[in-house]
Amino acid sequence: MSVLSSIIAFVFSFQAYVMLPAIILLLGLAIRMRPGQAALSALRLGVGFAGIFIAFGFFVKQISPAVAAMLKARGLDFPVLDVGWPPLAAITWASPIAPLSIVLVLALNLAMLSLNITRTINIDIWNYWHFALIGALVQSVSGSLLLGLGATLLIAFYSIMVADWTAPRVRSECGLEGISITTLSVNGLLPYAVAADRLFDLVPGLRRVSLGAKTGTKRFGILMDPLFIGAAIGLLFGLLAAYDIKRLLELAINVAAVMFILPLCGGLIGKAMEPVSLQLKALIQRRFPKKKVLYVGMDGGILMQNGSVIVTGLLMMPISIAIAFVLPGNKVLPLGDLANLISVMSVIVLVTRGNVFRAVIIGIPVVVSYLLISTHFAPLYTKLSAQAGAISAETYAGQITAFTDGGNPVRFWFFYLFEGRLAAFLVLPLVLGLMYYAWKRNKKEVTE
Image 1 (cartoon, rainbow, N blue to C red):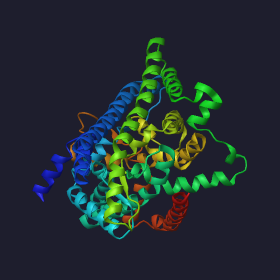
Image 2 (image 1 turned 180 degrees about the vertical axis):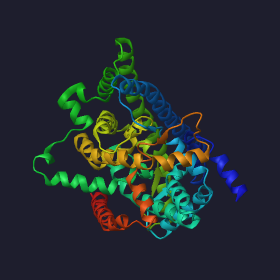
Image 3 (image 1 turned 90 degrees about the vertical axis):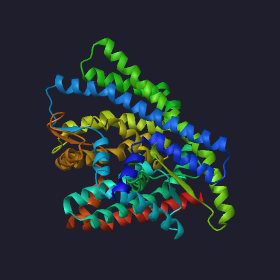
Image 4 (image 1 turned 90 degrees about the horizontal axis):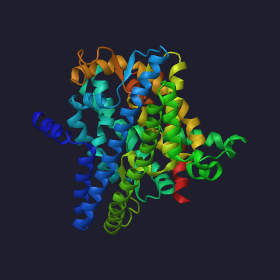
């Protein structure tokens, strides 16, 4: 086990923008792409993801001081610090669950493919930690390795199955053929989003409201352009932070710049994956004529080329902070994970067919759940992060959490399911009902 753990630790010491291109290069050569074409796809993928990492890091560096200044100017205090996802990944890789999870999730995916339970090949191995995290949490509380592995495999099964249902929407809204989204924090809420979108269709007044990045620009001009909204969000945060005119304008331009860069990076990832997906599809159809469709499972970053995804994520940022101010029981202010709203909201945007209005309304209950759950789990995250060496009393003495990944309602439900909580089992019929409805809607999407 120690040798396997060392190998896993070494492999995952590389960032996603290094690991994923290596996987794509090997996959491309295995499916007989020309070496030059496989190398170019791998390089484009790496540059696209590196660009997203750089842009998100720059955004957090710009917006965090503004949020801190806003709290200070208004005498507000939130005792739980949102540090984003890195400590959660550290908790996962420090757990004995991690090395076993990689092997078992890969085996699970292959079994699901062979049994025609899924059409997705999940190559986004770096994000397997999203599955293993629930296992690490369950094991830390129960002391059972088997329960932890069971939780990991069940949530992976759920995410890989739901990934299939994202593929028609990725095709229709992003123009990418044969791509599905496998990241749990992105695709996990798809059944909820499908049902909520249907509720809008049943309300006479609301069903006619359509406001997307493209349609909105035609109707409202630059007011719906991601660049303009980015600058406006920057101005809003700067004003709330009582910035002087120099810092105010700098923040507005910097946020607008991030919103310009993200779609370009997402488009580059899509351009990288298109030839791989087409070659894989052609190969599979030649070798297995009955298996007509196969999807390559990818990180949600590929969706950032969609303008409505960017606009929705931007609008949800001030909305989330406003909700945090007034939500009873909340002790965390979105900060480290604030930029991640663009990613976690992306599949909801695809489900609403790029309708920003619907996506924002559907996203509000999600934000409420993020805040309450991330607050609730803060003591556990703080304890396990300290044990993993991700934080220490010298660097920060208070409690920490992660607003989106730490507050994910799907993971929260699975955690209490494996704790044997009655409430989690009572919700099971609702969850299965939502999944069944999403499956039916997906069948309709595929045939259209």
